[in-house]
Image 1 (cartoon, rainbow, N blue to C red):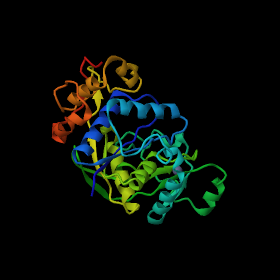
Image 2: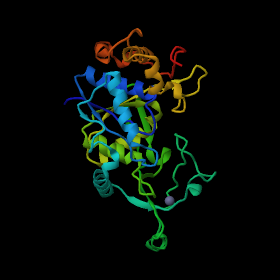
Image 3: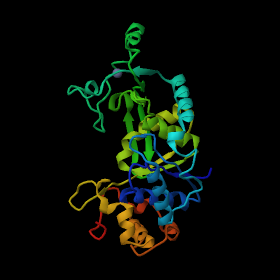
Image 4: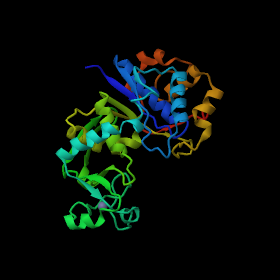
Length: 307
Ligand SMILES: [Zn+2]
């Protein structure tokens, strides 16, 4: 089966150095295996996303020399237009697991006494799981989120870069949200339904999303789909150790494009990932040099030259 990787950026701002490094690694990994690339726009959070950022993301990827075989900023590949896919996935999940409305407020979820999951979010207590029909009827006039009951079993997988992983969803995550109370689809559901529907076999993304992987693998299985291979990348940090964020405007593609030619930037990003010697390069020149073994596992300090 042909490898299928993906770009899945969120148009909530200009592409950032970290996004560019993830995109380059995803592209090199797929292309070095003779694979194809799908490009979708993750704009379910309509309040934060803007169409002009989506156009800019596509333009920044093309400028870097990264291409794709399917999708882009076109209809059918924007999450905002894929509600029918998510409705269908929700219905399929609900046939395999208990999906139930949750009326808990943010304050209730963040109550100081609530135990916390490994990623720092409150571990859901399961409070609304066992409401009686009468208790549900009494709340029915208020909007509810939809949660799915997770099993008390260990999900194990092998990350393509960080090796064996495991998570018990009931103990470390809790029942999680598939659709928010404001009607927006949850990231976990949309990403999984899209990766399944688009035939994605390899997901390359930052290590900050490692903690989402068990949930997504479990949802893939509920959807009757073989989960993709997940490969996580180290995070980028400033020389003082703090994590880089989108707020650092001097590291967005607007600023970087003003300072470097595309081959200069691509060569520098690749070198941070351990690929090549930092000299100017087109992405296609780097395909034969690419190997996951060369990419560091510890976080990468962005060299002063780029900061
Ligand atoms: Zn609840």
